[in-house]
Image 1: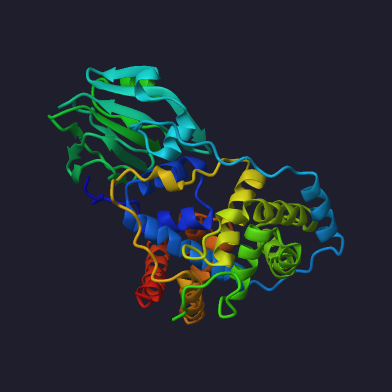
Image 2: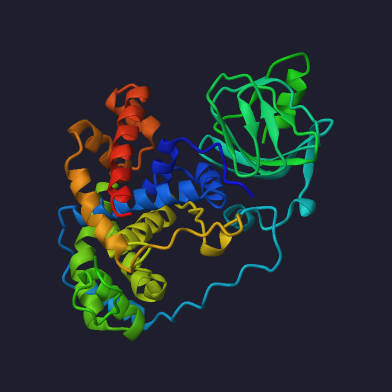
Length: 217
Length: 191
């Protein structure tokens, strides 16, 4: 497997390392990190930056009793059991997403948008952002749509292309608000993506009203 | 360069040594020393991010409990003590204050085969890098240091920093990217 060619924006990695990025977008970043040694290195650097900033904060004295209270609590707390081993066998989902979904694609419910294009019934949302899975049959086209807010796709299986590039496993495609694009799945197999949006899509074109219903989650 | 070292090595950086003593020997004296150093800083971090004094002390307890219970997962080759404790503090705050889950990458999540991280040259490289990094952060132009601190201390994503400060989003991105380039140099120098 080659390393990804398309990455989340550097500011997004910073927001992730600084802890300000919300859960839904963090899920996409963490899932991309599973594929991308370069972004893992960058996040480690940005966390080191957080470490330096923490160490350099002017200290605020804590209550005299805090350490004693802590030791009492620790005396009452059993040592944590060692983390449960990852389930044997390869999952199509990277770890952070596998833990969030708790099932493989075959076990999920899918909603057909147009022939060959499905969205998962599984979805998470926080604030104005939401995430779900997008599945495209080989060669399938996602209908033209524009965005009222940003959209990101992480490819987990297969690949797709649009006006902006060709995306393979591990790649992140990012679209700014109001960027129409036409994604077409590669011809040689199904394409599975994590789709993160910051507001529901608004479809353009004759079937827009119908598709908008399908895309609302 | 520091030699390969264990927790008895006097040349090893202090806080890393203390954490290893907690991990290996459940050393409560070492833990007290870590608490005395980090608890007031964790409190300051939580206060900056909006916690009141008692909520901040609750979070300090949470973080320091995790430090005691999970010290065996600390690896001084990968992170300095303050970086490791920073990540715990950040994640505890997200759990407790924002009541969201923090999607994290775990060591066995890597999807590429043979794509292991390059092994650090020696055990305490992370702590040495932190020294260089501190100098780089200290020398950042004020407007770059400002956006960086806002990102870490105000729970604002870069788009919110732009809105709140009345700085165009493109300018915030430019400043952050310039700061990131300088930070990356601190890591390149160690190689």
